[in-house]
Image (cartoon, rainbow, N blue to C red; front, side, top):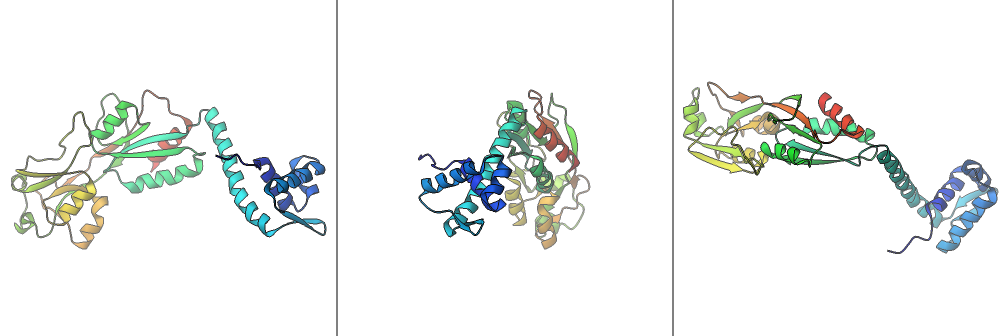
Length: 292
């Protein structure tokens, strides 16, 4: 890659001359001599091979080419400043990245609320978000490849902070045979029908949470796929209310009239990597997730 001929200091100097309206004013702001500022700009124009400024009376005015280049340079200088700030924050223990693994059933709206509030406080810290299902969250946390985890499971050896419940509803298409029975349903009724369940993304000890032992079972890879299947009349499932609000409203899904267990409200918890101290950015995100 070709090395740039013009330095960031030169671009900053040009910006100061334009913003302050002249070489003398820029020199005062930059705490340099006027001759030094003039030389820097002159050298810059020589290196670029074009005129960037012209003198109009006693004021330095941009040429057309100078105007284009200066506008582009402002973003360059801003990014360089942000990079330096990030390096300073990292030196003080501020993390460059927070790794968050979340069960796919946890509402995106809650995450968006917390992450939106985190952005202006992040100081350049990135959030790497990863979705897993059931024990997949636990495995990622125990492997040490996540700083924070959100799960409805009781993860052995970790102390979780309660974030609230998520409502799951037993649903099927309005024309499904279970609805055509037109009565209160028992678990025995469900056992004769096909149930759609979500595949546990864990590899070591995957769980069949919520499966009733139905004679027929379709296992799918995501909640969205399960909702699509059930909305099309292919089986029944327990699905998060927040994910199927539109299908319920449009009449594509209808709650099953179970005598018990029609709704489930698992509690979700926030866990942290116990082998790694929480950095300042992670602590801020924790508080935002708790309050969201």
